[in-house]
Amino acid sequence: MEQVCEYSGDRITDLPADVIQRILVFLPIKDAAKTSILSRKWRHQWRGIPELVFDDGFAQIPEDLSASELNAMRKLIMSNIYNSLLVHDGRTITKFVLSIPGLPPCTDLNHIILYLSNKGIKELVLQLSTERYKVHSSLFSALHLETLDLGCCEITPPSWSVGFSKLTNLQLIDVTLPYDFFENFLPKCPMLEHMVVVCCHGLAGKLQIRAPYLKAFMFMGSKDVFINCSTLPLLFSLYPLDIGNPSTLSWFASPSTLCVRELQDSVLEEFLVPGDDNNAPTRHIDLLQKVEVLDMNHLVLDSWEMERSFVLAILRFSNLRRLTIKLETSQVHDDQPANDRVNSIQRVLGEENCPDFLQHLSELRIGDSLCGPFELDLVTFLLVTAPRLQLIHITPFHQLSSKKVIKFMNEVMKCRRVSKNAEVIYDWNDEEEED
Image (cartoon, rainbow, N blue to C red; front, side):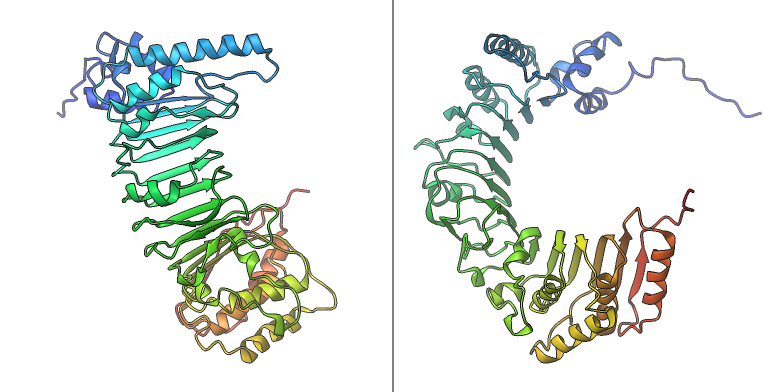
């Protein structure tokens, strides 16, 4: 007869110390401290957790506080954070996050950064949202940093700084920088792979970036700034964010020298030029021929001219492998029937000298599809012209009727496919509509 062995011990108490540490890392620090009541073994475990996160789950600051009340709350929050560090008995603190909306900076932050720089800190996040904090120079002695994320700060690298030899991720939002930050300090971060620079101050003129391993770069700033990326051999993701500036690539000097393989969102607006076919976008043609991945998650095509211009722009991406679009609007005009639009696209392909067009495209994804004429034109057009197409993935808008989606599917099924491996997949729940 099979015997069942029952475990009579305390499963929580008997967990290995490293497992307990992993559990505590995933808890808010307040909850982690409360685990000290579970058992004697757990009593001091939270004091050694290597990742400390102080965000809005740790403290929240009401918006309607008076100046004296705000100052009192700031002192209380910083005192709690400081005490948490004082009782910390671990050898290292690998991650420290301070991101409490509305928390004013104070000199206590200087002591915290000095403490962290001696604790082997690898990831530091200081996202402040009120007064600008001048980062203490001891930050630059944290030589193990791999991720640095600063917001509403001011940094001035000291002359003795040797940089961050292990830094791979850098995010600067609303940060005041020295004018020579890109030229003199970034070369001291040779392993940098991802960089975000948004609404930073102090940058002007033509800036040279030297980061041999940089793969993704997101930038938003003054239109008077020109960034030379010609020395970035591995850059494959370029996200110029711009608000109100019609030329999103105006920051990048000599864009034809870039080895960019991915563009996203507002970059395409640089190539959308409404008008006749003869006015097809021709700027930065060398850059377009290098792009392999194009993600357009907020594409607005609210007129036939913009739809046609979008197609004309896509014609220039001769090395495109993957195209993802998510339409905000897609209006159908009575004077441009769907069939005419397909013929117009095909005429453009015939008139334009683009022999390599779509030779490499293997994947198309359409999110929140309205299953309208434009999407149908695009899908059928790619099915008959892309010889290496393997997947078309369509996610219909959740409020579309089953009748409209099924009609769209039937039209796509009628289309011949130049690629024998092409599949059309719909991410759609066919649920009966409620009366």
